[in-house]
Length: 118
Length: 409
Image (cartoon, rainbow over all chains, first blue to last red; front, side, top):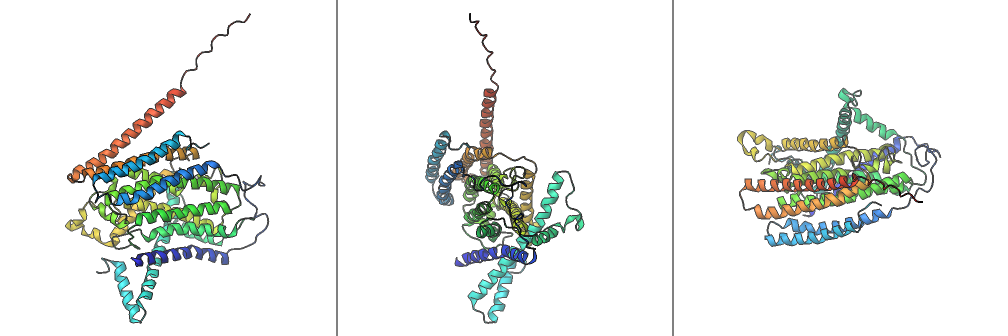
């Protein structure tokens, strides 16, 4: 058991090293001549207008909230889906009841206009 | 256990024997062997990635009625090598005011999140990294690291277009993760396991694509959205926000974003093959016939898997180069108002029918599952048609003729 996760741990370490190697190599090989024009922020070839930290649209936050609810629901559905074979039909209907409660939440969000992109 | 049966374990045992005869402690030998295996797997994935650059450019060219790269090497096969050399020797321009640490970590994280997926991808019945018994959950988790890389890239670039692209891309990716996770529960129910190898083995009788074609369709759509490819490619809408979150990246850092996206697309093609098309096996039991037993050799299975993954990748490319980009509000409405309810209906349908029909003979089971999917698809299309009809009628309502003005005085 621990051997599998040791493999994944080593994979993570080597998976971080592998993309870094060409970047380090590029740093040794590529030219580096920074000047002010090259390092200026790109905006379709003109001078930048206004702040670069544009205002965060609140609608993204609403979508993230709805995503969070459904993500937690799916975490609960994983063990339900895994054990369906051994358990009677009643358990399937229980799971459907759980999904139904969350679908009611989705319908509520829909009717309240939370899923619109204003 | 011979080399042809089980190449990795065969070589592993031989190497362990050699290392312990040099009086190395067993734990250190195991770690060393793991590292060798991991490096081989990653090199294989990277080589495939280089080939994919060539495949992508040739296929997009043919879709657009032109030839594609054909100067460098026969049929342009050396083109990706030239691309890599170019990207490594290009100057690395960091924009002024960028957040240096986050700016440098983002492309590494994007590449790592894709490489991590290759730890559990089974190329054959005995050629794979590990066989986790929570493989499905691991896939969803490792894929989520890519989303983090995108917001890091957009945030640290000190560029409003990068920031906008990153916001849109992240809201896109997290929204489409819900139908994907829910649909991934369908192979779990049908195979009764979350391990990727177990799901492949459960399809030796019948592909899950036939048992649940709607699940395949929803998985395809949400996979394309997760990858950030057209028609969901708002993050790099070339005509709108000029390369989106990776505007300010040059040289090899951009190279990792690009190569990472292609490898990610191929890996999702591989997952489509595993979860729905039988992976490295899935010959409907034909491989037990006498003259077809060579289909069980691991190297042949690996070729079969790569062919199926290429088919999945080709479908993803086909969609990319045929369909125009979708607007952000249409994209999010499509997900929350159509895909999420539909995927929940498919999940419920699979769970109930799997329980009820499992006692019947197998052809009746297959027919029941397939037929129920067709029924759900038909009902969905009818609902959409009725809705469309209602919208059209509301738009075409004739404007009542203006009442003639009463003459005043």
